[in-house]
Image 1: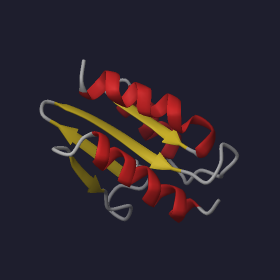
Image 2 (image 1 turned 180 degrees about the vertical axis):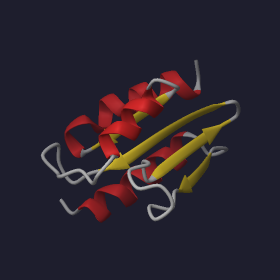
Image 3 (image 1 turned 45 degrees about the vertical axis):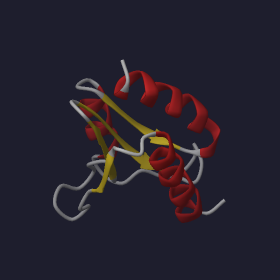
Amino acid sequence: MLESVFQRALIRKIQKLYPGAIILKNDANYIQGIPDWLVLEGPHWAAFDAKASKNSSLRPNQKYYVQKMNSMSLADFVYPENEEAFLNELHKTLRP
């Protein structure tokens, strides 16, 4: 599956699950490695980067920023193989 196709479908699922959430696309040129997407729901947030598969390559600093942001809230790489697990964690984070 193409990353762009998976990413669009994932964004649609998140919008459907959390209709009041704000979903923002981050500027990859501002800080290289920051996850591409930020989900804001009330006082809670999560960040993620959609990948075509668990074997997709990472850009410089991506692993660092995902780990750093995950220590603050939820941040992860999401791919078809872990989509359901990520959506479960997203629910725990946005609706504790």
